[in-house]
Image (cartoon, rainbow, N blue to C red; front, top):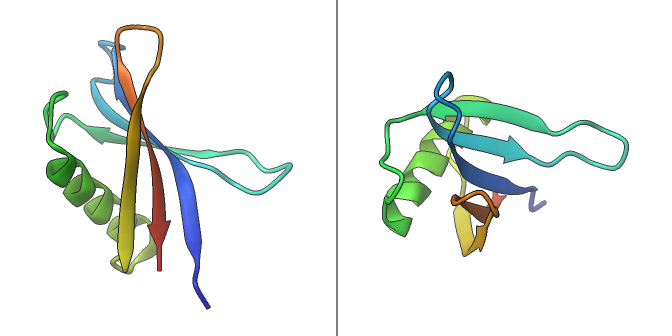
Length: 90
């Protein structure tokens, strides 16, 4: 069965927690999971670099490499930053 995780990847402008932040959406009535990924990838990273970052993060989070990562069109966060919607499939 195809298992799917969705959420968004943002760049933190908070100086105490710099770098990428990963938010994994949960089901209805459940809180989202937030992971700090640090500044391993630059804010202006390519989509390929971001997909590699997501693959590594989900490998650590689930213990398995995803079969597919769809990094969707970037969204303006309204604070001068960018958020990317993603869909990860196992």
